[in-house]
Every structure is written in C-alpha cells, then in structure tokens.
Length: 357
Image (cartoon, rainbow, N blue to C red; front, top):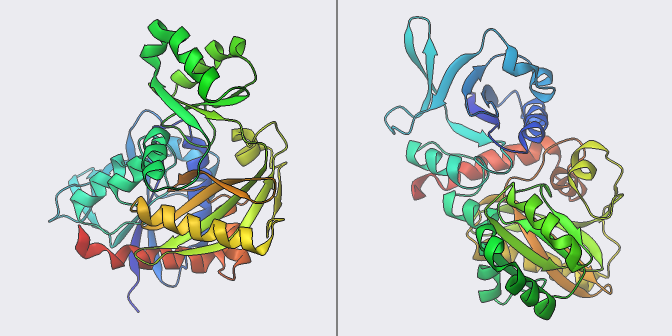
C-alpha cells in the first residue's frame, strides 16, 4: 500500500505557540505509521517557516527551532505545486504532499489565515475551512451568528478596545444594565483562555479590558455563569457526530491556560455528571452549532449547564488541543475511538471535501 504523505504544521505566531508544539508532537506520535509518511513544518513565534527533520520530542520542548538542519520552507499557494517549497543548498526543491494537518492553535493558524492559504494551494487539509475557522475564532461573530440561529448562550456584549478609551463610562453603564457582575472579559480573538479575566465589580474592569486588549482590538464581555463546565467533541463534515460529554472541575477560579496545559490539576469526568436528557440536548446542540457555522472535520464545543438542566453554549474551538491531557481525544476515546483511529478519521474526512475548493 502506498503511504499518504501528511504535512504536520506546528508552532505559529501565537500566544499558544508552545501548546501547538506539544499537540503536534502527540499527533505525530499517534498517526498510523503504516499508512502515513509524515513531513514536519514548523513556524517560529516570529513567523519563520522551516522544514524540520528531527524528533517529536524536540518539537514538544521547543528545541526544534535551533536544529542546524532546519531548511526554510513554505506551503505554496500555487495549485500546480501542491506541496512544500524548500530552500535547499542547490536551489528550491518541492515536496509533494497529499494532506496537511495544521496543528495550530489561536491567531495566525486557527483563525482562517492558514486555512485560506491551504484552500488556495488545493491541498486537502484537516479541519474547518477559512470562513468557519474565522467565525469560530471571533467570539463576537460566533455569538452574533448563534443568536440568529436561536441557540442559547450567555448574555453578552462586545466593543472595540479603542472605543473604551473614549467611551468607558457608556460601556460600563451598558454592562451594568445588561449583564451585572460578575462578568468575564475576553479578547474576541484568542484561545486557551489567554487574556481572559473574571471581573467581580466595576473597579476591576479597566485592568481586565487592558489585559484583553493586549491580545485583540475587539473585546467581548459575558455574564459569569455559575454551573457545570462541559465539553462535547464533534467529528464529521455534512453529517457530524457528537462524542460522549465530559465535565471539567477546574482547579483555578476558571478553566484557564495553566489549568488546560500546564498544571493538569483539573478533574475531568467522562461521562459528565448529568441526566441523559441533558446530555442528549448538549450533543444535538453541539452538532447544530457546528453545522450552522459551517464547520468541517472537527471542533470541540464547550457549554455551561446551570442548575443541572439549563444548557448554555459557550464557544466552539476548531483546532482543540491534542496534548496528553486534552479533552477532545479523551472524549472520543471514551466513545470507542482510539487516538490513532481518530487521527486517521480526520485525515480521511479531509479528502471528502477536496472537490469543494
């Protein structure tokens, strides 16, 4: 059997660069080697692209950036090339690839930018297309579209950070009238809870907005929901499937970056402690939101459940973590799909929508 050549892209110009590297190492280690030949393409934090030929362990701990064998390389948008252009010692070489797995989290990778490049290239790739990736990345856009679809969410409002400089008092009045306190203040475009603050009173708002504004120029403010935090993994294209539902008992005040990727202290309960009817509502809502936003391949859909019965959609993550403690692969494992089988399915799904480019 001829092996398919998969280009795994990792790193990126993002606050989630390190998590991407850990996720990518895990993906590389678990892709079925009997079916796939893997080519590694790393992006540094300052945006340089390199063909990397070392080990997954060097990707995970960041040593890959200093490998003397690294070669400048990039995915060509030219459809006649359908692969990676490498700057070699004797000129430019081309490595043809059958599929790209962009294991990139956050800005400049999960937000439609790289997806747009891959659509131009004509190479099948794992995950959502450019528009769905951008829509799900921007929390203000996600809220607006899901409100139009009648999907229940937390009360929210959004504004540009620049507006806060001149109109803070007006914005504060709106927050007080529409949401009350406590609230969450978030950058509209960032992942893994980077730049997110829980604000208990108006006096804390200025600092929280300034923190979020370091990540994005658009700010989202949401009511703080007291309830269970649960997640559902969705897989598929036109007919998506939902996994079992998992529950997170965060070790911090909320499920933040350290809790997700560093400390690993959060308790994960699979399945979640919920009645079956509520679980089915979560699974069906996850698939509906996924379909409404045009997602393909995969997404993790996050919810709150208030008083054990009120289902409130929080957000969709179009390239969720694939680390050893990440919920997406764990949820599918609990649903009877092993990590390697899951990755194989994701690659197969990428070929289904090739003709839609």
